[in-house]
Image (cartoon, rainbow, N blue to C red; front, side, top):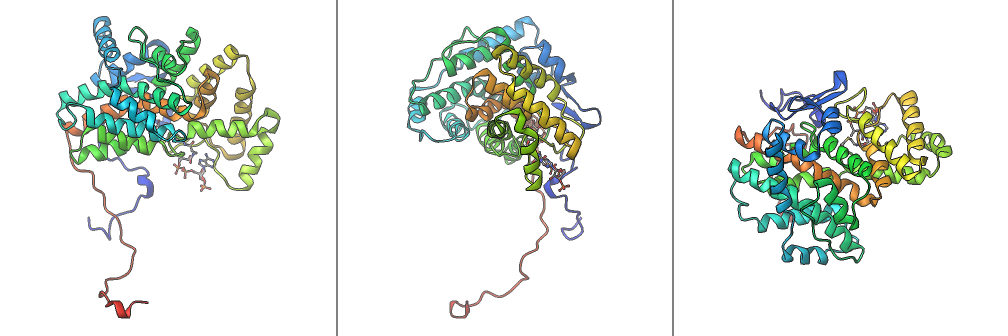
Length: 378
Ligand SMILES: CC(=O)SCCNC(=O)CCNC(=O)[C@H](O)C(C)(C)COP(=O)(O)OP(=O)(O)OC[C@H]1O[C@@H](n2cnc3c(N)ncnc32)[C@H](O)[C@@H]1OP(=O)(O)O
Ligand SMILES: O=C([O-])CC(=O)C(=O)O
């Protein structure tokens, strides 16, 4: 097909760009499977490490495979003194997404196998990134508050260790479980913008660290992963359930976006929202603060009634992370700590059966013309 004949699908809406066996997003049933397993069942019954293993290997681990995966991940968590020094030198007001993007770039320069894009090397690098990203996120966050980094604890699970790295302590099991559930729900979602970015970078023959840096940059945007932070800013601005409906009306009046609502693929509800909402409600009970979930309930009901638009995963994840005690700028980096699993699975899949990703554009600029001499330019 020539450029002139081709149909333009702005935003690649509805375009099937390749095959994938990692996950299946099914808007017709509001459902999602990872390697065939319903995501809500994985969230309830499996630890995040099991889900990471599943995404990378196609099957759930048995007990000894899981123990080995956990041992390997826990053994790779420590950062070099050089990276810790670089993190301490980051501007203290830098956004943690910029900090983790830069830290992953640095990890790429330190990794002994950076340039090796073979599948075995990519798998080893993915494990190192999975293990080190939480350490880097927490170190940068603590440095921004003038606090020293906390050394990772290899005896803790992935979820427990994240709390340990940020706060220096592990909360009660209900809180850890809610966090672990959120990691599973955030792990993978087909050809979303950040994953497609990572696949595009991989398609040029570039390495995993480059693909992940690009993925992080794409995820930061408020139309994608950045929405979980925007949701909490929105709820904080509303402040009280009694103001929710009036506040929403003012957004409608200004034809403004309401963060945490809408989705490119799901038009009748995001598969992950019921599970995340259940655990966010649980957090509200544990903390004894019902305000945010009450506000969320009112906003969701009103959005559905007035606009017929459903919430996406970022909507319940925002207040859930707030109730777990995390500062708002950590919300999207937490998404990174989880989505590295999906990104790496897609990078491996892309590289194994690669073709350069390179669509066309339809030119709408000036007609061809002669270059005028300087004296004739306006
Ligand atoms: C983990 C994730 O990344 S999930 C997504 C997180 N992002 C957000 O929550 C940001 C807010 N949401 C949005 O901006 C959008 O819904 C997106 C970017 C997620 C999807 O965008 P699209 O697929 O292009 O949405 P689409 O154009 O089909 O929307 C249809 C209509 O609903 C409106 N709409 C969609 N989402 C919203 C929203 N959050 N608030 C208000 N109106 C909305 C659109 O303006 C459009 O209205 P129109 O037909 O009058 O122009
Ligand atoms: O699929 C998308 O477009 C966005 C999303 O929900 C995700 O990446 O989890």
